[in-house]
Image 1 (cartoon, rainbow, N blue to C red):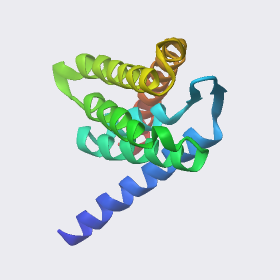
Image 2 (cartoon, rainbow, N blue to C red; image 1 turned 45 degrees about the vertical axis):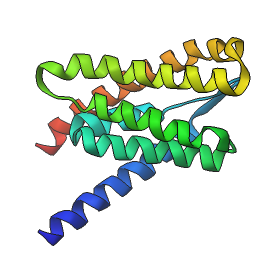
Image 3 (cartoon, one colour; image 1 turned 60 degrees about the horizontal axis):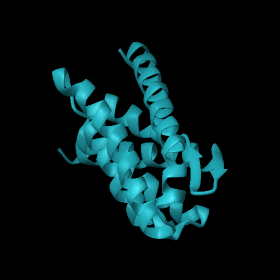
Amino acid sequence: MRNQTVQRISSLAVLTALSVVLGYFVRIPTPTGMLTLLDAGIFFTAFTLGKKEAAIVGGLSGFLIDLISGYPQYMLVSLLAHGLQGYFAGWTGLRRPLGAFLACLSMVVIYLIAGALLYGIGASVAGVWGNIGQTVFGLLVGFTVSKAYEKVAH
């Protein structure tokens, strides 16, 4: 029992670290923030481990990236946005397509609202297409890598 807990925590720590690296080193600055590959790590975690694990990895990764990137005003927003993104993306079975849609939608809408509160609606709307692109690209990469992982792991 104890070994399983240690193994689970270790897996989440490694996936969080990898997601932070993806999000921090592969980034494109925009007027309203940055575009990253963080979402790929979140979707990979969701598809391989599940909703709770992806919520933890997503929330922590988003929070930490904003902390080290100099966007402290977005730390709590990212914790919520990427945590929900991971949770919804981890839905399984017939709910998976709905979960993937809600994962993308929740991330975009939460950043839209936060951006509007911080910088005004104009700047926030300007960042919507970048956020849509980031989350859809992350979904595609995360799904592809999770399928490749399944073939190698089994």
